[in-house]
Image (tube, rainbow, N blue to C red; front, top):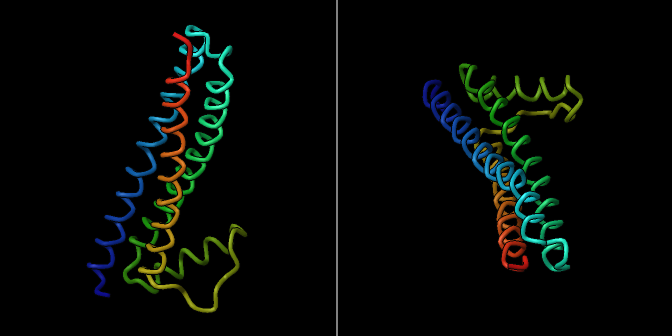
Length: 147
C-alpha cells in the first residue's frame, strides 16, 4: 500500500473507532445514571420482570463499556500505525508494543492492515450486539414498571 494511502486509511479508521466507542458509552452511562431514580419513583422494585430487566441492562451496560474501552485502545493502536510510513513498519510497531506490554506474543510476521481492521470490526459488531441487548432490556424494564 502507498505510504500516504496507508496513513489516511488508518487514521480515518482510528477516528471512526473513537466515535463508535464514544456514543454507546455515553448513552449507557446516561441511561444508567437515571435508571435508579426512575425505577424507585415508579415502584419498579415491586415488579420482578422489571427488576430482572434492569439487572440484564446493568450487566450488558458493563459489557458495552468494556467493549468501548477496547475499541478506544484499538483506535490508539491504529493511530500508532498511521504515524509510520508504511503498513509493515506500523504493524511491527503495534506488535512490538503489544509484546512489550505482555498483552500478545510477538508474531513471526506482522499482520496486514486489512486483517487488523477485520478483527476490530468483529469487536465493533460485538459491542453493537451488547448495546442492542442493553436497549431491549432497558425498554423492557420501562414497560414492566408499575404506573
